[in-house]
Length: 599
Image (cartoon, rainbow, N blue to C red; front, top):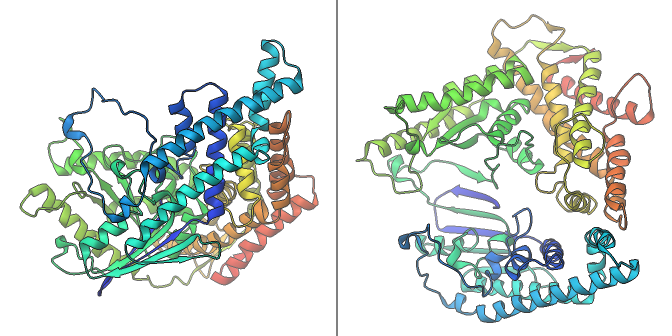
């Protein structure tokens, strides 16, 4: 759920855990309160109102981990065996400091107050509109949802509910005093926790509180509040013959296994990719190559990072079938899924994209199973997994070694750059016009107005993330530009002094140019979509009243996206000229740095 860094080192076990700022936690909690009031207004059961209150819609902040699931009675599941039921978890002194009866009573009080808020504001709207029949009630229902957040910001009872829940959440930080040192800001909110010990078991038990999703611990976990975890120590895998690899392992929130065709890598992950020596893409062998891992592979290619991509397919032991009698046939079955992706990637991003990915499938593909358990060398399947992991370490060492430079340099046509920028802007607008509910030819569904509202809040607030769930306008513009520029890189006018005869040398040159472009295009996209348009994002967020969702969508589309990424055409304008010239300046500066030319 959060960024994790594991340093394989000597010495004691050490940990530093950072937490989200209090304002960001409260903002997500207030969004949950809004959803819970809406559920109460619609007449949903208490269990549904409580679920809305405790689980944020994008699943990042699951407050039930911190506060528990309330005093609702759990019914037995006919499909669940007794052996699958959660085991008893012994509480320590810090756990006993948490009074779950008081917490459950508070949650019950909150449900009652949220229902009162929903009824009060619903009655006020009816009175204001003079609603008397079913048709009037439909208008009231629509206005209630659109006006709810504004009304809650001005509602004293809503603020009291938020304050009480935040106080209860903050009590969980008492768990930190069991071990280690807590560093707080001036308001008393914890910024980070640090600890070191020589006891491995105690260390893992303590750190688990910040990363666990174990249901019996709900009400006593801090996981959703954690922004990042960094641990170091003598983590020596037994399968590596007692030798400690010299590695720093970075793990993010994951890409999710989704069949959706539109997947964009977040800007935070993009920056992480640029800073690492090797990227291990972990995919499930039982359902490989869904949209998310394919999107990650495309990102590796267009950002010039394909050479440091390694693919690890897990659950290899669960790949079964009458046509799969041995490990080799299983590998071929999995790789067949990748082969199906190759043609599509080649068609979309050019022949060198296909070539780069084929090379990684050939030289950097690994298959493991049972890695969630202790590996036993006496078992054939697990011995094979251990061998694959050892080969993975060897391949990482090879990746770190830099190849000899290629002296031939490509020369590009500036006119082709204009076409690339035009295609990128059109692709960006097609996707976002559909999401905003504006006229578009893209086959992307319209997003609910509440999600667009939440996005405008994020991008209109300094210091907040530049995305909301899967809505990533900064990353989307960068992706569209980088995809088109990568295609451009593969088609130079000529080479100086002569064209390389080895495609591998051409690939190396293209990757170096793409890698240099990646960071600069991200900076340009962030500045144009957000940095220079923050007042417009704030105006979009502040829209309220009838048809406010349409007004918000129109502001984002016409005042932000139209100006941030205008589509170049035969009719010149300051915005169109500025966008095209800025992209050209970025490409030209990269070409000069790398010895290439843009004529």
